[in-house]
Image (tube, rainbow, N blue to C red):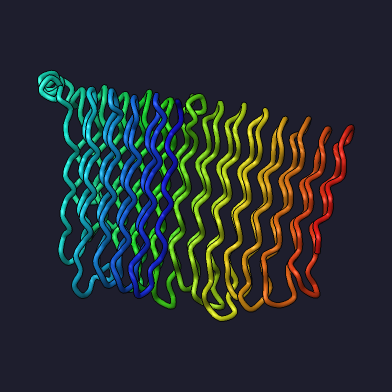
Length: 528
């Protein structure tokens, strides 16, 4: 009945091959809910950037999800943007198409920017989604087409004409997209109904992407523009912030992807937009990659905060963006967005960026967003980034978000990244008053060395609840790793079980958490 569709995952990194495609957003519930945004396409060094995922569809009363931005490429073509999801059948807005990815981000050689995604179709009392902006590069990609309009569009046009003359803004309709390469902000949507326009991607003289436009009373905030990729040792542009969602209904806009860099630092992803009253926070943009031996990846953007009453319709904070790949340092995943101050779940943290230098550092997974004050689960911590260099260590998983006061659990800690030595799992989030601590993350796989240690379980609620179980140690090829300790109970409740250790001479088990002061049992130690 209620509930926002899930956000599609970002596509993976492509080395000499193509970047991975972003996942599709989930469909919305029937009423007052929006489809999930599509995931961003993955970056490619020598091939084509990955295609952005399609946005999830609205169902009856709600907005379609925004298509994911296409992945950029250092030497090849940009990926195509994902298509926006269709509007709800009765009322809503079609999702905007995702922008095409940037081509030839080192500013040399041939390359064609990715095509923008197509906007989602309108319903009866609806507006079709804007087409996605074309990706920039030596040759500009094609712009996406706008979604089909409502059969009542002639009526909308008639009421818009005097409103625009008087107020400078239509009553019903989407804001215009800013031009590609301009770094300008998208225009606001119609006062009553309409999505914000997309921010323009960065370009020469203005490398940062523009912010997405504000939505109207109902509508989705515009996607932030992608930061410009740069050659040489300069830092790439930062992605623009997603626009604010509609005052009553509509999700925050997706943050723009950070630009890719040759020898400098990849740009940070833009922050997801803040939602309206009943909407979910926008997803943070992916951090830009850096492909030289001296470059570091950009940090993923933080997820947007959910609307004040979003928890009542199953909406929560936006997911954090994936950190960018870097040789010296993979970018950290963006933190998940917090839920409404009243109730709802926190967004998941973004995955840390990969690394391919044995002396470098893989990105840490983003911290999960905190739940609403009254009830709701904390967001899961993001997984740590991989390290594929000889002797390299995977990144640490992110910490789970903290829970609401009543009948809620802390978020699960992120899994450690794989490497010759696995990264440690993230700690589970803590409960607050009545609830259980989050489970600690599993340690990362160690290909020729130790696996990563498991994350510690989160603490139970102060009055009632069990501590979270410690995460299992990651599998390794040598001496083994230690399981995480179980979380402690406080007043009434059981301690969490300790995580199992890996097999090996020095492997160790996690210790069970303490029992509650009044009633409860000690957690069971993990097995070595």
